[in-house]
Length: 194
Image (cartoon, rainbow, N blue to C red; front, side):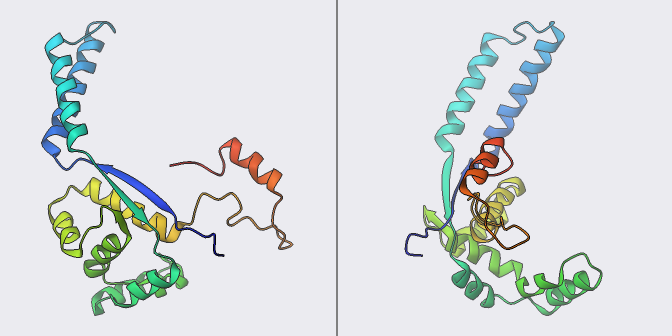
């Protein structure tokens, strides 16, 4: 077990949403004009130049965040420090009773207002971020960016790796052969890269 390393994921984000919006607008304009003009170059040199400038600015303002799994023990301990508020616990219980959630997820209940920033901060390794910085991002950042960050944190901490051997156990309890796993990995059903 000494060779075990945590999962890592990178998330590239640009928080200057005006630039991103302008890029989207320019791409739509260029595409619309190309369609109107019968698939010819449907944009002016000025639009192409502006799009190139906007994309260069976006690239300059884009940051790569790297998240690393905490390991089950640290994740569980962190969750225990952020128990759900009474109303949140009741919501979890109702969801389990109504079969919206499996029963075993009840042990995963947490206070989303405090746990999410703590989990993001604890999992961020490059650059390291404080809980306060995460709280500010949660309040000011666009929902799509927040969702990508949270998805990466959940993936490195809960989803497991892309290891083709993880989770593959035959009904008789035997592990599949390495040859079979590699073959499945090449076919695309396992071993996707991020």
